Image (cartoon, rainbow, N blue to C red; front, side, top):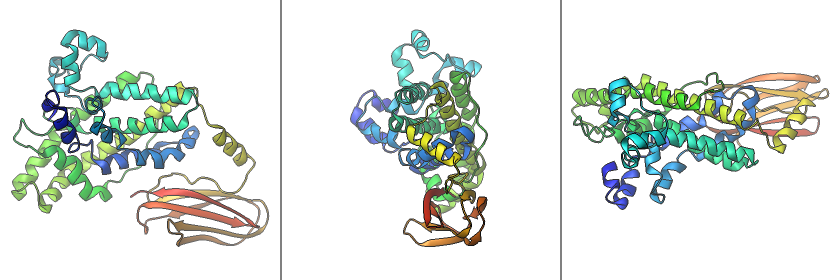
Length: 371
C-alpha cells in the first residue's frame, strides 16, 4: 500500500486507516502504562498519563488529512543495502539522502527521525512553559516509539506480501491484540538519562527488527494448525506463540517512552508548572492526601496520607459512577503519617477516586487501574 502513496494520495489515506500502528488498543496500553516507570522527580508527569493514553492514536488520525504524516510511522530498513550487509544504516538523514537520494529515503519511511524531531518539539514546548502542547507531543512520541517497537513497521515485508502472508499486519497488531489485550500485563522499569538519543533510537529499531521472523512464524504456525487466518482458533494459536515477545515489545516501548520523556525533560532544565510547585510545597507542609504510587497500577498501589489531629478517619475508593467499591479505613486515629495498600484485583480496569475524610476536611484524588 505504501507504493500506492506515490501515485494516489486518496488510496493511501484509505490504506492508512487499515494500518494504524500497533492498533488503537496497543497504543493506549503503551502510552497509558508509561507512568509505571515514572519514579521520583518524574512524579509530576503521572498527571499526564490519562492524556497520553487518550491521545495515543492522534498521529494515526492525522494520516487522513496530513500528507506528510504517513511516512513517520514506518521505516523499511531492510531496503537499505548497508543494513542487510552490516545491520545498521547511517543515522543522519541528510547524509543518507546524499547517498540514496531524498525520494528513496522518504519512500522507505522516516520513523526514527520522527521520534527525534518529536523530542525536539517536546523540549521546545517545555522551554516556553507550554505544558499542554508538550503533553500532546509526548503522546505522539509514544505513538512513534510504539510503531518502532512493532516489527512489521520496520521491514519491507510489512504485510507479509513477500512471504505469501498477506494481511498479517492487521491480524497481528489489531485483531490479535484486541482479543487478548487483557492478558498484556507488565510492570514498569527503571529509567536513566539517555546521553546519545540517536544511538538509543536506532538501537531500539535494530533490536526490534529481530522479531520480524517471530511475527511471521506465529502467523504461519497458527494457519498450519487451524487451516484458517480468521477464526477464533487461529487467533488463539497465534497468541500462544506470540504472547511472550509481544508483551516484551510493548513493555520495552512503554519504558522507552518514559526514558525518552525523562531525557528531554532534563534537557529542558527540569521545568515544572507553578501548580505543580505549589502542590509540592503543600505536601512538604504535610497536607492531607498524597497521590497513589504507582499510578496507573495493576493490581496494587500505595496511598499515603497525613492526619493533623486525632479523630475519626475515613478512606474510601469510588468508581466513576460514584459507587463505593472499597473502604480502606473507618476508625479513630492519632495524628501522623500513614500508608495504606489498595488491591484492585477484584475490580475491572478503569478510573477510580479515593477520598480521605477527617476532622471536617475532605480530599479526593484520581487513580487508574490497568489490567
